[in-house]
Amino acid sequence: MAQLSGLSLIVAAGLGRICLAVAVDRDAGHWPVDSWPAWPPVNRNVSKIVHPWGTPHLWGFPDYAKDLDKGLKTWEELARQHGHLGRECNAETERKACGHEFICKGGTCRECSLSRDCGDQFRCKAAKNGRRHCVPRDPVNEWTWREVLCTVLIVATAVLSAAAGMGGGGVYVPLLLLLLGLSAKEAVPLSQAMIVGGASINIIMFCGDRHPHYPQRPKIDYDVVVMLNPGLSAGVTLGVLANIVSPQWLIVLVLLVTLALALQKSLSKGLQQWRKESEALVEPVQGTSESDGQQKGIDLGSFAKLAGRNRGPLVLIAGCWLAFLVFIMVKAPLCSALHWAQLAGLMAACWAFTEAGAKAVSEQASLSEGGLTWTPQTLRLYPLLAVVAGFLGGFLGIGGGIIMGPLLLELGLPPEVGQATTAMFVFLSSSIATIHFMILGKAMPAYALWFTIWVLVATIAGQTAIDYMLRRLRRSSPIILSIAAIVAGSLVMMTVVGVLDVATDLRRGADMGFVPITSASSFSGDPGPLRRQGAARMSSRASCSSCSEALT
Image (cartoon, rainbow, N blue to C red):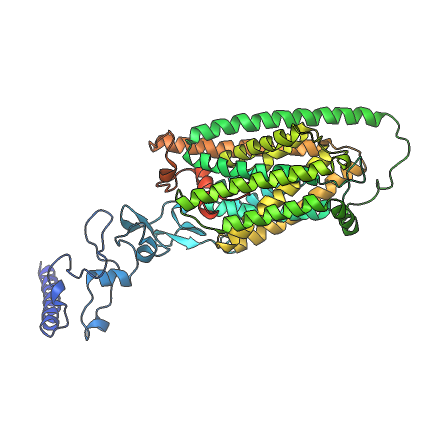
């Protein structure tokens, strides 16, 4: 008992000295009068500090000694000195009040729960003290098995995409969403960087190649590009608008039906072609082609000759590309008069370029042997089919390229020509999208450099492998089967993302019906991966005024 009494006396004496020091500091003017002893303080010039449960809280262990000569800090000033957590915030003041480390939720700066809570190019990470906060993404210092697996799968996808002439975005984006935890606003620009890298290699290797059966014609059918690209672009733009106002369950349902039909068509055609080639290879071949033993290379001289013969379509293709690039550089508030005028102007430009393309194709109809048959009926029908393909690509969040590949096969293009022509569509769309994302600062340089290098290597490998099959094995069916593989991969990956999204909507009681475009554009809460892809396209492309697909 005597020891306890002695300890009590020591504690009491210590507290007495502290109270005396505080009283002296207050009388000497060191203690702010407005903050003694009222709670909360009356200084309204600084945002109030709010505990997540509604009660005031002292953050950290401030050092009072250095402030004795100029007065002690208020609670708000102490909290500001020791971090952003607990401040009041709203959507307009989130960055100023919470910084990049914390998120604004429920009117208060709080810890993040998921990476998608953080801003672009940030991820949610637990610190050593257990507090979760947003940190910049750094693939060098945060390399895990997820990045390794994602890289391997992206390389495999790039090889198949090169063989099919497609971009592979329908697989890239789900991989980035599911494995790396990126948001759609991060995954779409990164996917575009990979797509434009692979498409550039494809075009460089295809530009000098000639039609497999008509050497006077290029392998890339420029007539098809000039006729279908404007309609494809218009369809993608309208499809994106439909995507952001439609319920997720409808998007997933249409996705399943569309890709299942595309898979069935391409797979059956590929297997049928494989059987025909196998039967033909049984018969003895008279002689060999000079090119059978040659490796695929870049023939710029041949490209110069082919370009001279197709000057008209190439000029229109370049003019269409430049016109749409100008369109997407003009930012217009969503649903404003300028936005609708911009959208109407884009549709008019698509129509004008289609009409100009029809005139150019009609004038050289006699030279179109080996391509599609252009009649007054097909000059109207095929661009409409491109609009439908683009609409489905934009609506489903997979881009028009993955629909155009099977469509060109159905229209009658040889697999080699369809492969090269689809690659041209992919290059035109992804190059515009990538330029715009770079201007907006949406690129993630470290990730883009890493994955794009691997895509470049994989595309060269895929082109070399498919060229070997075409030249030595005399089989074109692997092109069709590669298209089927990309469609199947997109079907599986996008369905997984979509089903998870629908489950999340059901769990949180989200509205499962259509929403007005003005409400959809705000995307309060978590709209889900497929809807977030529509949001990324909408916000980053002058409210959908673009000729390019977000995912090709």
